[in-house]
Image (cartoon, rainbow over all chains, first blue to last red; front, side, top):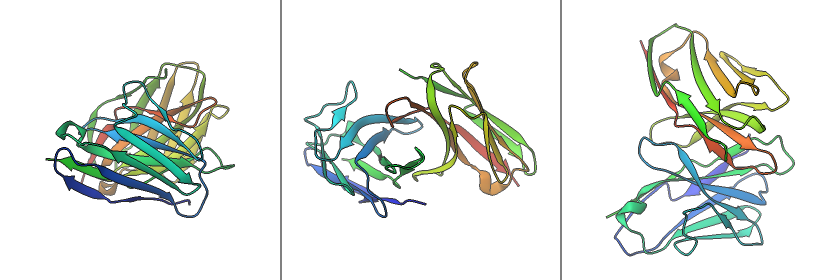
Length: 116
Length: 112
């Protein structure tokens, strides 16, 4: 099946710094990728939809200036958490539907962000 | 907006038992429904995908059903094994978009 990777798998940073998380589709092209956030013992919540070549669309309550998304190519989307704070500590997961496929979503392994 | 609920939140069964996990959703105009498995601290593994025109899908010991009229889906696991221990998430897809609305999950523990 299709593979989606994320880097880094975990990151610890100080409050106020920015963190970039990469999401790559390894063996297929993805014009759209999704970014989810999962707090402990909660389910995944969609943050934003990343669109190749255009601006991302954000869900209600997600600050676009804080969570910068860049979908520069058909295989790479990046999420940058700017000026991270402890409340941003979470598990961030990206997913991508395979273009022209069967609507199956392929998920990355996730990135654990801890902000001190 | 689709709201997805899963009951129970946690379930413990002895090895070998058959079990059913429940998922309910509010919008019957669901495009598809997926069941995922998530191991602690890990990403998601897709188990089964049911399109809105389908009623069920099977893969090995897993069988998932979809009843749009009642807003329910079930995941049936036959002959459970300790390796089945994980959190199971259901997620509904909406027409015209690919993003998924996730339930809160059922944490399954299969006791050897």
